[in-house]
Length: 464
Image 1 (cartoon, helix red, strand yellow):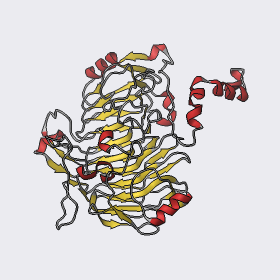
Image 2 (spheres, rainbow, N blue to C red):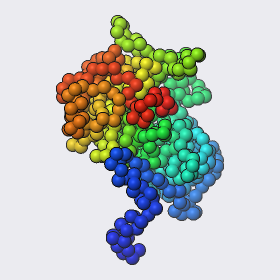
Image 3 (tube, rainbow, N blue to C red):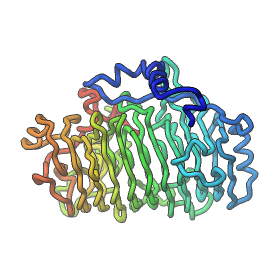
Image 4 (cartoon, rainbow, N blue to C red):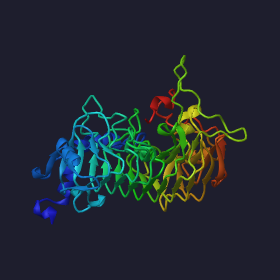
């Protein structure tokens, strides 16, 4: 009926699509068999109803005037252009009227980055909630022919720790920074000791995409980045992230004397899908790395030594963390370098810290498959549980991570393999499942991202 009302036909519609300048410009990239991963451009946001538009300053004033513990509901299809960070004050909820779910995101109120300014698009303060909204970083629309709109810190949403902070049931995408959603472990300026640690935070039921991202030129993006130690991440769909789809971090807390806080988040029942863009990993756990540098060489100092003593040294903790029952797969022309990365020594080499504990189990590709260099690599977390992951994989040689003779033959033939598992020497231990042909035990260090430029260390391509 829509076609009839506009007096067009499907052939005319398809012809118009093929003649579109964006499609024509992408043709060479789409058809390039050696570099099949490509992103596509977005378009500037358009006000569907001019009477339903607000400036960022107007919305900020409305939020600042709202009483504590209240909800501010925006009319459907409202467009808000933000020229500076929008702050959702403590205990407030911002949402679209009618609690519209992300499968109807075109009807959600839409908050967009207007212009190439720096910083997170939205900051959700402790106890605040961001729900049923369309968050658009406008990465492609704010770029020029000579300047990218990307800057690492230009996240879409930053959750500022505290208790009961939530980002639920939104469509979030087109990020201009290193992640779409960052859950911080503690607010920059806590107002009382209850905010010194992160408690009962939620990231639930969001549609998150990085379609306009790229896995090159230090301009990649995560889907969800979790520093908060007590976050439930569930029911999200993460599409075409280019760094890691969902990643959890362990850290030390400056408000508690730099004490190590165990990362104990619960990440479950999410979908991570890559069809247009490749990524470094689908799922990951990152003990982080040493920021300190040698005063003479300016090179990062070493993190934790290999686990060749008893007790082993692990300066980060994942005790209580669970990353379970998640699903990931790729299209036929893109890949993950690692499907499930338990530890990040493949990224940060000797500068990595070592984590301890956590469970990474029952993740799956379902009836589909993923193109990966390795299905699972444990390198940088000890005393961990990695069990019952069921991965249908297609071999692809996209990193410098080591592999066995048998795996090499499968790579050359392009044959499928199941649960190819790598263990980093000195940095992997616990209850770890075997692959179809055991383990590949090798130094899984400094081998991710090398296809970008084999002569440069991943330190030249830092995520944050």
